[in-house]
Amino acid sequence: MTGRKSSSKGWLFVAPVVALVAFNALIPLMTVVNYSVQETFGNNVFFWEGVRWFTEVLNSERFHASLGRQVFFTGIILLIEVPLGVAIALTMPRKGPWVSVCLVMMALPLLIPWNVVGAMWNIFSLPDIGLLGKTINSLGIDYDYTQQPVSAWFTVILMDVWHWTSLVVLLAYAGLCSIPEAYYQAAKIDGATPWAVFRFIELPKMKRVLTIAILLRFMDSFMIYTEPFVLTGGGPGNSTTMLSIDLVKIALGQFDLGPAAAMSLIYFLIILLASWIFYTLMMKNEAEE
Amino acid sequence: MKIRTWIVPTLYIVFLMLPIYWLLNMSFKTTNEILGTFTLWPQNFTFENYVKIFTDPTWYNGYFNSITYVVMNTSISVTVALPAAYAFSRYRFLGDKHLFFWLLTNRMAPPAIFALPFFQLYSAVGLFDTTIAVALAHSLFNVPLAVWILEGFMSGVPKELDETAYVDGYSFWRFFIRIFIPAIIAGIGVAAFFTFMFSWVELLLAKTLTSVAAKPIAATMTRTASTSGYELGLLAAAGSLTIIPGAFVIYFVRNYIAKGFALGRV
Image (tube, rainbow over all chains, first blue to last red; front, side, top):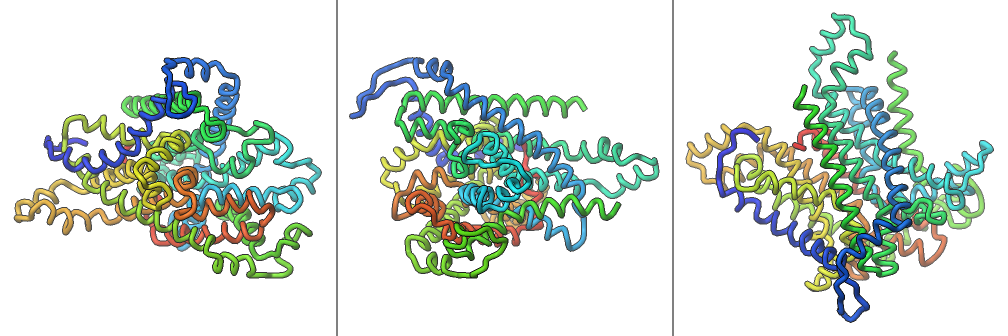
């Protein structure tokens, strides 16, 4: 962003984007803010409630439970997907005819509609007619994701690893491809161990893309709705009900607009805050080096 | 050593393909076979499920609707993002950094938050149950993404290109369309790929904003799954067909996929 000339023409060019996004973001967001401080009994009659819904949501056990499940889910998938993605990217061929094959096949899960991903895993994991469910059960492990919370969690996490690890792979791979061959030759002459090559050449080069990968995976997994909804419907019981599923249940299912709106704002703020902290830390880290 | 490095990506790809294989497997089975026995491949191979989808308008219209709004969204997002990305990459103006961050925050907003307000907003402006409503709604997260990717590519083009063109007497728009756009064509491809992808896979907003006339294929599937009980074969066939557009698009941009996010500025 250096060396740009100062010009108010800039605003002219961004005007269409601002208009479009403002229509889509500001009006709905104001609606949400509006609902979050009022009570309604229908007929468009509203009563001022102040911060009542916010304190109610923040103190409700239901919200704590779904937030807890959400944090647990996001934490686990980040712990699995990031190292796994890096490992796969490191072992992928860098040139030759197999590169395209690998990239195309790995990118495939990213382009399947999310409800199809859910439906696919639903069928794949059924204990009686699904390949995964049948295999696990034939190993002597009692597995049924529609009945047991542990099985449901295992399936939801495995589905997300299946669905999104490729994004980490693609990004890490892009970082690796930008390393000049000369670096590796120099490392070879110095007699560097594979670990040293990874730690001092490959990891620093992947840092930027990995930041993007972790940010994207954090944001998207924190907003996850469709895949677990189609797979388990948030069940059995509420065991896989994460924030978005819970929110839609309250807003569109029970039509409790006030609490739903307050929960929406708290939810959004958590994502913004976490992304901002993570981003600032990474940038600070980068500036120090 | 050589064998060892091959094992990891190969196992990973096998893992990726298994659920897809199972979906395809189911789609060629009859309902009786699916519910009756556990078979690794179809014993009574049938196209019945696919025939149903291609002959029943409620099914094939779903595909038309989905493709319509995805293409509309991709064109809208990339078109409005082009000048904006140019401004972020070339000019300094009041509040530019804040504006850029504000745009990105929209990518961080959970669609679940917007489901109800979007329903009310698009009903109020009379666009409920149209494909354009879904296309506009998806631009909430796709426009910021397109701006972000394009800005990264544009900043990689030296500013001397712009200056030389002015010296040569090009007007701004002539320069932009004739010289600048061809110079970042790969970036446009990548931006189009990602906007296509996120619009194609999203369901929550698409489902909320449509009822009958503009119902996306994904919504047709969920409604079938919930109303007519166990039509797994049909569901599997419909699901298998939704993989095709994605596979088609990936093939075209396979050399650029990895670069897309890598060049974007955070």
